[in-house]
Length: 185
Image (cartoon, rainbow, N blue to C red; front, top):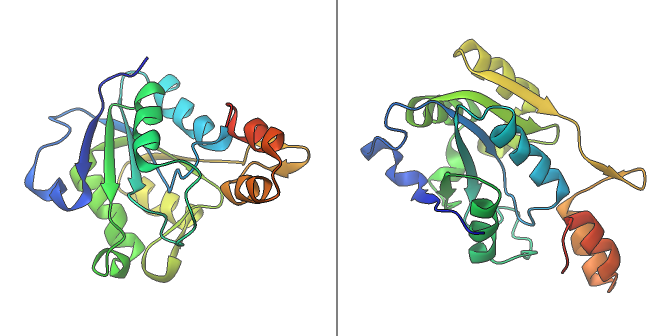
């Protein structure tokens, strides 16, 4: 069942009151396959913080220029199905890629009113990846935002990851890809 989900571009945040006074629970990432690891992050913000507005900050295209596992349209439909109510979409532009991690965190705080942020251990942001998950957490918590870093979801002794899914797809191992995605290919 597809629910309604508001989509807004990052560049529009400063000109609108998106959250309309509501506090958000959010996660930030590429979310390029919406695999089991991504879904774990999403469940944290939709189920553990049900009183907050569930929000995802993600990219229009993969900043690392990897081919997508799913299309952008499929990603948006799945996010809505998973209970996300607001998706802030970043175009990884020449301007955006120069923002340092601290400035990014301050903008997230100012424009999205987060009360709770959940990140994976392999999270990085900012110019030349200058901010890792631990630094993000420290900075966000200094701004009064509860931040949680979660370990990766494991399968077969290895983390579930988009690169692992892309490799399985390249090798034609559809069963492994479907297992890691948590849904049929």
